[in-house]
Length: 92
Image (cartoon, rainbow, N blue to C red):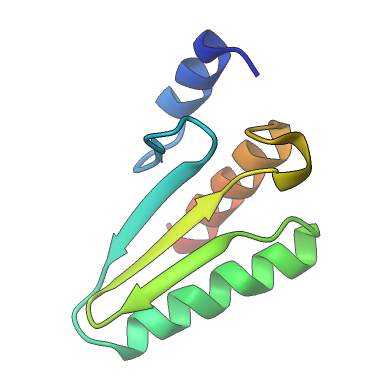
């Protein structure tokens, strides 16, 4: 995927940013406490299973970070942006 396409797609995704290596899109969700961060991690995992496109998820007290990339393609594809958009819809 071209850099211009990535920038345009990111402009439509509230809260998401490009990873430093340009191969993933990332979003950090802040929470007050641990339980909500775990729930968010579970939601991202559920979505990944449902879409058959699994994110990388990190979480701890007060945060959950979700990253989408297409490992087989070595970078970003339409599937990454579709999953990020769907996750945004679920948490809206």
